[in-house]
Image: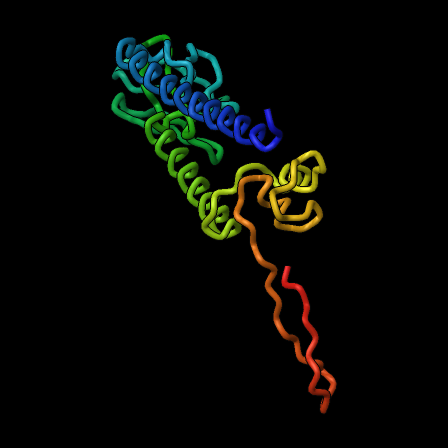
Length: 211
């Protein structure tokens, strides 16, 4: 197989692996949502935490169960905080947790980052990935000048200057047209431009090759 086709095949393999990774990510999120809907118990959610009476919730603040009126009880030493059963937040020492459920002997809570729905996280990741994809596509088009580049610069350089390619008819082997026609590209002419001598009063111009 010629060397100029190796980079293209590896690129296709990379694109295939990228789509496989994206599909696995989306499938994992879908399975997690189905699992959370099918098993709505708070203690089974891997992103939430569950404590029993006497265990810490935030730093030195522990869960104290329910009092006689059904209020949630939290204590730290001699300090006691009571929350209604419908409370969704508990904050202490500059931190807060989201209360997901409770029983007389256990409490289920989640950190703020763990309470974000996975669907929102997936949308955010897709937005960031789409922005990066558009940026890479525009940068490639800008650098390639509207043409599709097959292979990297080092591969093209090695293929272009190999001596085992048969020269085209009527074209010398050392000419630039022979190296381009051996790759299947049409021969290009070198462009010259006249650059005036910066010295004042000098009317001669010199031709320089435009790279």
